[in-house]
Image 1 (tube, rainbow, N blue to C red):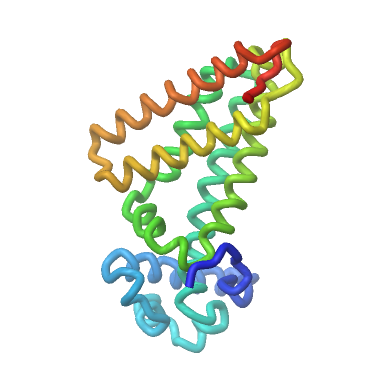
Image 2: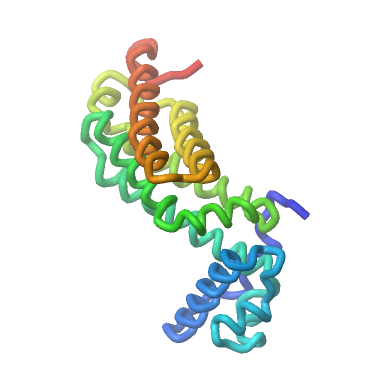
Length: 222
């Protein structure tokens, strides 16, 4: 059953000690391996525990069911994407608009294409394990970082009060949507190279045009 809430999929507890963190890491990697090789339908807690080299009882200390396992893997993946965007936004603050957008787009694509097979597998099962709520959380984090970065762009900060939140939302949607489209369309090396080049141009052109056309210099979209 699909849901937009994540409370029913959250792990039972978070590892505190280093040994427990290693165990959880092994369980997560085992989940990914089985998901890639056998698919979500054949993924079970028993198979994951066996692959991770732990008992089912140990696995159940952290994850009550397979949906919780997939939720945790998806959450880690999306948190890594958000962290990459946040880090890129911090590095790019105060630089020209075109350069900061290129920095962020490259960071986002690096995170999503580091393991394309994992990204594709998680696209397929996300809606069934609380994915919409996780995606919303990551989008909020990314938009907040983008807004703070764009506030420092010379083209915006010199004449405007700041970037319009809707323009920022559109940029993030463009990054997420086009990336998913290309990955699901095959993601050949040529396609990935074109994605990087065209997505940078798309976001640069859009935000540049929005900033230039805003009344009074404010980055506004109506």
